[in-house]
Amino acid sequence: MFTRLKVLGIAAAAALLVSAQANAATVIDFSTGLAGEGGSISWNGSNYIGSNIPIGALTVSGAPNNNGVALVNGYATGSGGGHYGTLDFNTATGMISIAGCIPGLSIGSVDGNGNCTQPATLMNGTIQQFDPTSPNGLVRASGVDTKNQDLLIALGLSPNTPFEFFGFSFATNPLSPNGGSSPAISTDIRNTAVPEPATMMLLGTGLLAAFRKRRTASA
Image 1: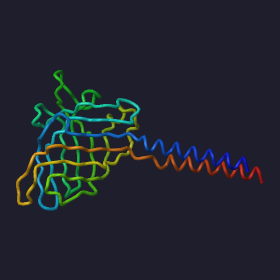
Image 2 (image 1 turned 30 degrees about the vertical axis):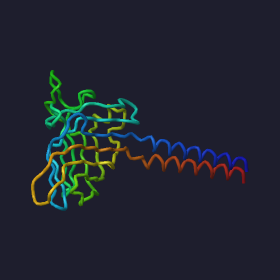
Image 3 (image 1 turned 180 degrees about the vertical axis):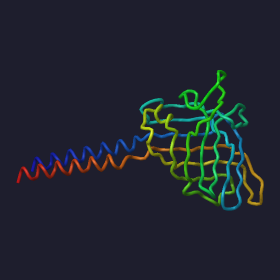
Image 4 (image 1 turned 45 degrees about the vertical axis):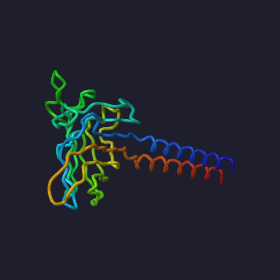
């Protein structure tokens, strides 16, 4: 009986460990930063198209390395002055991507003055859900995406770490489906690493095997 309780205790502790690891997943957040208003967003009553929207900041938490805020620059311009990373998306096709340089993490090509001369694709994803009826200028969407492998390596993660974006939102002035566009006032794309089910499955299988072995030995 004691042996069985001990094994169950180990299983419970392992489950808590897995839960803690999942809760501490790396979060990568692309946002407007100091870029200010910029780019163009249009709405046809059903879908949104965004182009050349400036992304000025990358905020990382829960990563093995380089947590904190890093500046993103590139070809997009904003009311804050300067050049920033570029966000493009189209909810009709599901496309969403961010391109730019992160000098602090040696991502993309930067000249001696710190200007981004060759942006890297920082994020490339698919919009799976969004709110199509928010002409008041606030839209939320979600989906899955992949990150730049050099970025993941700089953060101490596997270059194949899967991510999902679950906090994509932007604000504009009220939009009309009859044409025209408005600049993005603020943008936020919050991403979290997806827990590895294979690792969790292996852990569960090992615990089950250990329990069965103990049970057989005590029979």
